[in-house]
Length: 270
Image 1 (tube, rainbow, N blue to C red):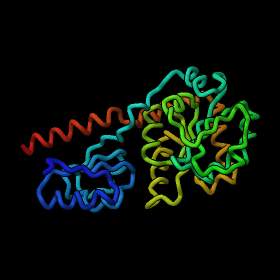
Image 2 (cartoon, rainbow, N blue to C red):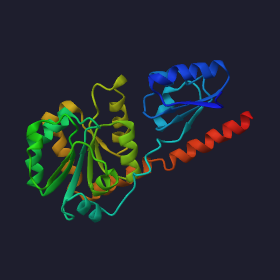
Image 3 (cartoon, helix red, strand yellow):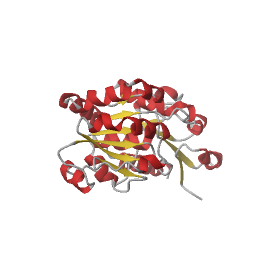
Image 4 (cartoon, rainbow, N blue to C red):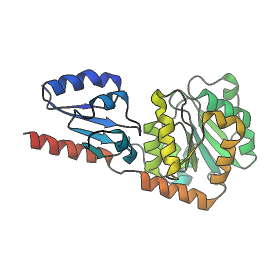
């Protein structure tokens, strides 16, 4: 006998939302991506409120029952002093640092790219924090350069983000929200097989607002990524532009905004 049912967009939310609506229980959806998922599209005009993370999402909704809340992020995600963080991660505090993230499982294409091209960056005095994922090849594991710190999975993400001058990432909603929250210059490489190609739309919106740069996976062989990396990391002005735009695009205190809105709806119902 819940007072409120909240769906976060996955397939498993569909039946609880359906049953709640049929039983006149208050409902909400929290949509993480720019493009609403199937469950959001199906139930958006039936629930009490849809929390959206990007203002562009409203273009895909038929009913104006949305509220721009942003995405809640983990409490561990916070800015720490950059030099302290680089030292903590075993890096040179005076070198530019790139954080490479291919998602929790790693990315074969991103790993392959840096495996073939990492020396281009070492030659420019750039060092890496590289989250390779569990499926990384043995030859990646055998790289022993002190300027490259490799991890299957990074637990100290607060230090990893804070050590990074530039983040290379997939364009999933959680990673994007954390990157924006911390004001990190970034290059987003959308996963091309994501449902409804939603990662590309996430990245495209940020690219259009100069809060990030989008590089498509098929462009990795064309030199587009290294051109984008050097464009950002070699220019303090460009770094500051993307840092400031990321912060502008971020919505702070998303969890609190959602909580307060839900509390208001529940009070009205009572």
